[in-house]
Length: 628
Image (cartoon, one colour):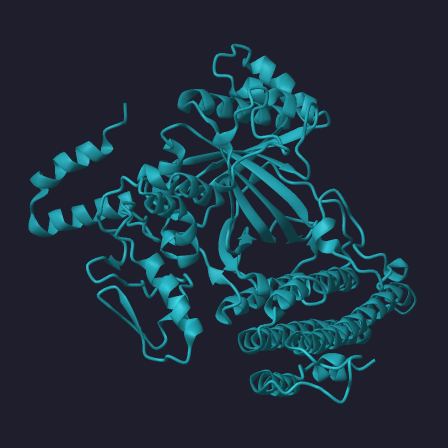
């Protein structure tokens, strides 16, 4: 089959025909000239008949385009399945003949073509959906139909979302590239086990939902999908039913992850993390899938931040314990937590671990217990999301993760005395659950550089740099904006600003807000009401919103009156950028740091050059004085 002439090339909305129908029916409604010669059976004898006729025509066009999309998807999927069957047969040929380089290069080129076709089909789908939406808006305005509601309902399902088809292709390509690596390098996929310590450099990015497919396709060409607790193929080769609608990637290979973060009443951990203080810690309890109970395992993870001048990399450590011990761990008055007791707790969750690993995990658990007692930590924020991970099962040198459908939940709303955190069936207020505006893509590198294909994603604006982005900081800032805490730097992004300041806006509307007028000290000129965006910031504050718009005395003047959509975006833009009402400060994206060694060296140089050593020695003695 030749994918270069697939059905997506012929994918196009009959927009001119629909617009002509709108004009015709509008003229009939205005002149009141309805159908007479067709009688009372099927004729348009009332205005309702005209509206109903257009809706039927519009819905039929949606169905026609949808069928074309579905046909193109099935064609690409069938081709990918045939490639997978062919490449698996190469292992037999290699055993007999030895060299299969030519065949591998051809199949690898075909796999790359599949990636290109999927992206092209997705773009064509989005483009045609936009055309149909604009026609729906026009029909509602001129004919009084309800086509926009109809379109919204249709476009929220397959094949318009492209999710089921794209994720199936991702699974297919993961297996394809995996077999290619096996044949080239002789490595076989095995069950991956998470290490107890992680020493890697992490790069974080935001991804808009419509661009998630491109990110996954680029990732799978570099690394295979990582399925926790599994090895072998994701797809079942010839046994896979490609005709069956499937969201396999987000129900099996992708993993639901829940994390409960801890802090105290004064948010000390939040304050240290947002300042990025040396030694700042973060504690969370994490599980995969449904919430564990009793003897099921919970992972406690402790993150420690280190500054560059300390010459120690930031560290993440984890220890597994049974869920039934969480309440005892958080009970500050519990006297049981001795070395022997902690060893027993660790051993129950890690029965096959070596003695050395048990000792290390026991020390970590006691360190976590000491931190909980010292700071009086309690559950503060919960995050939930679906994660697709891409990593070789052979090592931990390179890892990609894409987190989608991210929500944050206020854990302080837990009023259940019997549970250490919110139960999954607990009832909380709507304000206590917030959806984040972006998916989060992370690249974790043990050594070396980020692969070029991932760098290309940033160059082409598919992903947006989100340095030091934190779900924990986002959750705490979301539910504590009235506490006048320092907000994370991404509060200057309009999408997050609408979340962080939603509570204050509601208070103002109710007339109960007690906040005073003061300016934000990070790139905002409050007197003019104009957002001075840092050129180095990668936040996406509606670039099109400023098109044809000038802000004068906090009033909007749209010089392009024929673009009402831009005008509406500008109102939202200005309302989010004029932070006169808010008293919160925003943390800088890159905090100023003075490296101790560099600072001392500079002071010595200055002292020697000016012969003022007597001024420098007292300073040096203070620097070298041991801490008490």
